[in-house]
Amino acid sequence: MDETQIISVSLDSSAVIAFIGYLVLIVGVGIYASRFSSRGISEYFIGGRKMNRFVVALSAVVSGRSAWLLLGVTGMAYARGPSAIWAVLGYIIVEIFLFLYYGRRLRNFTEKRNCITIPDFFAERFSDHDGKLRMTIVAIFLIFMIGYISSQFVAGGKAFASGFGIETGSGILLTAVIVLVYTIVGGFLAVSLTDMFQAIFMMLSLVILPVVAILNFGGLTEMINTLLSMDAIYVDPFAISVGAAIGFLGIGLGSPGNPHILARYMSIDDPKQFKYVAVVGTTWNVLMAWGAVFVGLAGRVYFPEVEMLPASDTENLFPMLAQLHLHPILFGVVLASIFAAIMSTADSQLLVAASSVVRDLYEKIIKKGVEVPQAKLVLYSRVVVFAIVVLALIFGFYAEDLVFWLVLFAWAGLGAA
Amino acid sequence: MISFYLIMFVLPVLTILFTLYLAAQNPRKNG
Image 1 (tube, rainbow over the protein chains, first blue to last red):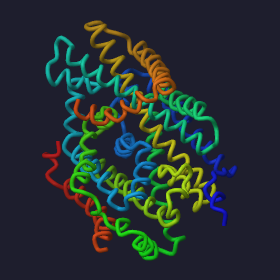
Image 2 (image 1 turned 135 degrees about the vertical axis):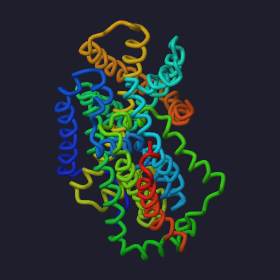
Image 3 (image 1 turned 90 degrees about the vertical axis):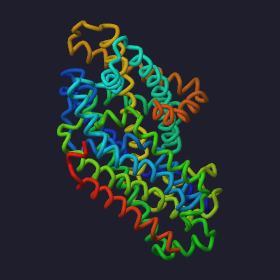
């Protein structure tokens, strides 16, 4: 069989329909959520602390997992074998402790002191009367968040380009417009609800794809034997230096400092439900992470040489393997899951960035001591969301190198902050 | 080989069981 036939992306119309169905769903959720989110700034930015525990669990997990999990970790497992598991184990463990020991404290404290944002929380926690601490945190957030959002748009553009054959620039714009539409009208509720659907898409594709691919290959034993005959590292989870393993596990330390993840904890309706959130969130994290590593392992037996992947890029493995093994409708779901990963991260970051401008800069510093009507604050929030999208697009189009460096430091920078 | 099965199949189950165990601990300490 001609290899190029396997690896060229050809889209079936049912895959396109499944993908469009997914887009309609998330935009519909945005419109559905718009009335609730327009009530006030607390509703717009943290869902009025009325979020259901299942929504919070999935939203918290999926906001922290960008396309890195679907494309990066699968590619890493393809290249290095099961030792890629150390890159995901760190954040899973850190998040268990965040759910169980930090979430409830943060939720209770922020409700008692009426905090809506993380800078709000720090300002209250450390009695920041002159606003210097708040300003510093807001500045750090904005720099990294805009870079982060920009990188998600660029990733979306590239995914559109490889998945649908449209130009990267148009893909970037399209990603930005979709995220903008449901975030601007639906606020936090829309972002959380779409996150929930996106988490379901991501989990399904990361579980179904490796199972189908491994079964098609002749089963697990057959796959392991083939991997073993290629190189022992493909079945050795410890084929990694101690330093690299510690570095990988250290990725998890970024989780507690990323405000778009922490905002999820503040939004839950009943703080006693964090035990449930921990169990559901961790189960989701585990299924997605191990699924991603299995995708990489299965990919290795189907594409023994990296040259068999488009552009010899391991990040193309996930969509390639899906196209090879799944029904076109399911392939559409897999494509949707890549966008889901990108959008679920971008939308949460977008809201957090906007909240620090409207709540922290405008309401708490510029208009300190003045009562600003809620309707006005919500309107300003929507304007700021729009402005941040425009800024992120400018960064994405004209300063891609800068964005790369910002993102490289963002996870760690925000974690440290 | 055994390490492959342990890490790829036993560790994920243990991670979830560990979470269940912690969640079942004294609830007052969880907050």
